[in-house]
Length: 361
Ligand SMILES: *Cc1c(COP(=O)(O)O)cnc(C)c1O
Image (cartoon, rainbow, N blue to C red):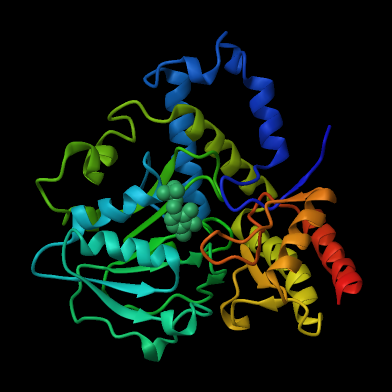
């Protein structure tokens, strides 16, 4: 088999053992004589898949009865609209903490639907860091406060979430969900497209605090109302059954590795291997993020010239390392080190980087 080290930003690598299990079960799911893709979403087998995925998700995040998890479609980008449709109202603006490209998108979409304020922004700093607590100016009673826990494109991450008092806190965690323990009880709503840390593209996981859900707007189209999906256990209409099944296996894989504490240790070690090379390169590699805001999921850096960056990407690819070109909007290099990416991939990348710097420095 052709083994690659896959640093894709999304869709991204899945745990190899999960893919093997999918393959083993593909033609005959648990003796049913058919694949999970071919059965009714109302069948007992699928109901069990759906229930396990919800239960594992809640167990991993350490939340109990006051929370629900639903599996939706439309990606995180649909959540950019769904959150304001359900929770913005003319009288109360939502407060946005702008940390990069994804936070900007979430804010723009909300602003098209209702009042949305910028409560902090590090745009003037080229989004090299998240805001300091003293830079955040929240309204007294916003509809909610929205943040992006990890900026996939710029490569920054909140390492301590801001204190928002009693205000409802909403987070886009698409690119670092389940990569570390968080105090999920501080959030009214968390959403994440699956294709970075949870499973295949096509599923979006949403964690909601039930007491907040009770305050949602009426008059929202049925499919865009969170209450519809909560009431129907994500089975109001045909869900993306295959994606939820794979997501459930990924959650089991995380639990099997020791849960979020183990995952966080593994992720910190992995990212350190790469950041150490950047810091020790005497300026050959220049990290985009300020050290205190560095993402453990997306490591972004530049080389002296674009020509050198192109050579870096091409030579890495020839050495079996793919997905290292930065996002088209910012250029440079980006190594995405999501949960499924193993330490061996990070060691290989670090060694390639040292070698490349020695040859071109
Ligand atoms: C990838 C990503 C998105 C967009 O996700 P889609 O599922 O493509 O809509 C939004 N926010 C963050 C932080 C992301 O990384």
